[in-house]
Image (cartoon, rainbow, N blue to C red; front, side, top):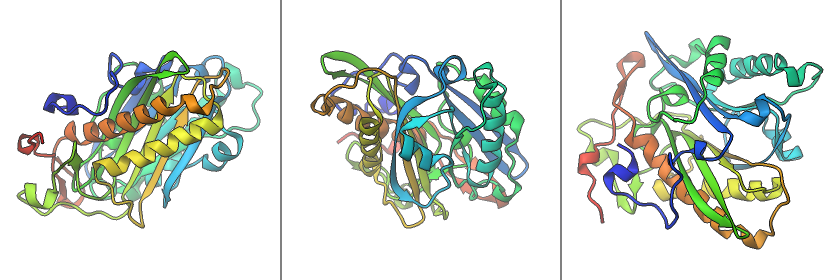
Length: 327
């Protein structure tokens, strides 16, 4: 189930046709899921088509909620206000192998035949509760498959980088959503994709759903809880404005019960298309739409996830959505 299947409506704006980050024109998503023996892991690719066909940069902004993470490429996004590659999400200790594979992939593109410097962007969360994280299972072929399989339909839940994640005491995963908003008199789309793996108490549209009360077993409380959020928009925002959008994405985690713990790596990257940026006063709806889309994406990441058994016989249980009652 997605949040809308439970009758949960977040905010006042309409969604895009897919209610996904891919409602933003030119944005694709692909996954590679790796499940074998003690491994429950994978990689998810958010692919702006422009960066694999004809552009070398897109404007972007970064927000850090809590910086206990290994977000590769973060300082250059912050300094230069741009991304140069698709944004890949994976497992903590596989992030470096994924970054190397991403560089190889990009250098082989015609647009980069003379490139001598490149900033790969790879985010991660720690899936070590359900997966043998020390084995670093993600390989170059997994990265290439995720990028090249990217399309408009987005699978959610226990897939790709969300295969082994745990959030709010339940099985977490990948989630996505979108909103259609007005920016300076123009209809624009903002979409979000999340990799949920953080602690706290699940709250859905104001209803608390504590795992310790709703599950018949003790909920997992793994170390290294984190969340990666990617926001895309077709609004022509500049890097500074996209950084402000990214901050709102991190704020939205609080709506679903995040506790922003000491060991959490909570990051948001927002990217958009080039164009003449609107005045800041025109951004109110995109701020609001961003928070709504992220909140719903986070809920979708849990509601679409399935109970998963993994490393050392550990289990992360799905949210018992039958227990949800609208306020």
